Length: 200
Image (cartoon, helix red, strand yellow):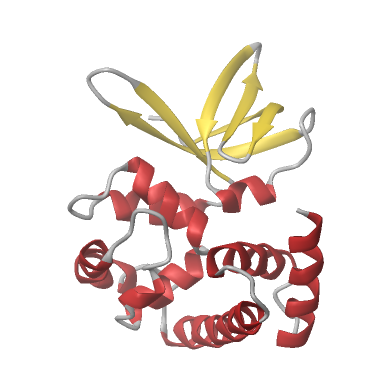
């Protein structure tokens, strides 16, 4: 129904954003990934949107990138996955890492996400693999690139876990850093993540 909303970011929290468009304020639920991409309140912003319609409520979901909304909608096609869990998946891992986990048949990469157990991870992979392969931007070279990025991310996460930090904490820190600076080395990611964790 709504492709996107362009307006002024009126309010921002880690899990929601309010965008004012022509005097009307729209509330969106957002992922941690989108939260990290959004500017300061008062700035102009564009959010790709998805409207969830239930008998008792209408809820807008907002995404900073089209590929994130695309994956959100694919996740909703999985048995037992609703909007809340789909958003948790997007908050737990970057889009390319979810693609890689599905294509590599690696459900263990999804286990650390809140609400995703072994059965749910297996269903996501089983039901979405063919759909992911059909996406225009997921070909052989893209998969290879995603695999390389995933290895770098996992090396950085494992290094930080050995220092005593929780896996979920470091996964979020590392994901945020690589979204902003995808060309960093493992050592640079670890150093930046340590600063981010200590400042949070």
